[in-house]
Image 1 (cartoon, helix red, strand yellow):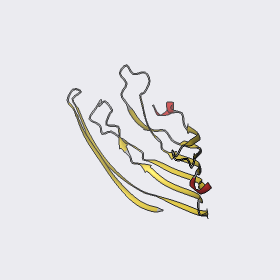
Image 2: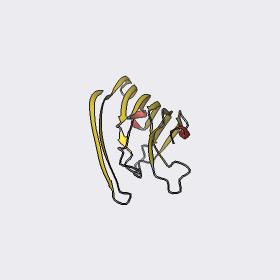
Image 3: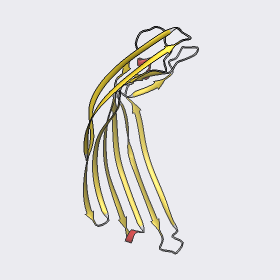
Length: 173
């Protein structure tokens, strides 16, 4: 469990001698991030949990852009991330068997993307916000270790995850 206040200051200066352009800009932003986890022991070797986390990716300038004037580059908005996870962890049969599972959902607001706009002979990398995106899924893993002297065992992981961008990228290029 934690809470943090962040203040980001960003700046750039580009002197493009080949194109005879020069540009500079600065920006600052602040945000609060953190997480909260609740855990409940169901026994000596079993536990369930729920976690909420809030994160972010700070504002940024597209310094990979090709300058076409001396105008300052605009910063893309910060990306906000909200994550929710429910899970369980178990150690059974005297430690010979472990079983873990987690269900998660992560929502991104102002998702930052890098892309090459269509229709350019030599495209330059663009940095933009693509509205909302989401990832969610389920992960489960287990391991069984035999009591043999060699310590032989088997482990398996199963996962299903899906990711979606909530807005077509054509709108931002």
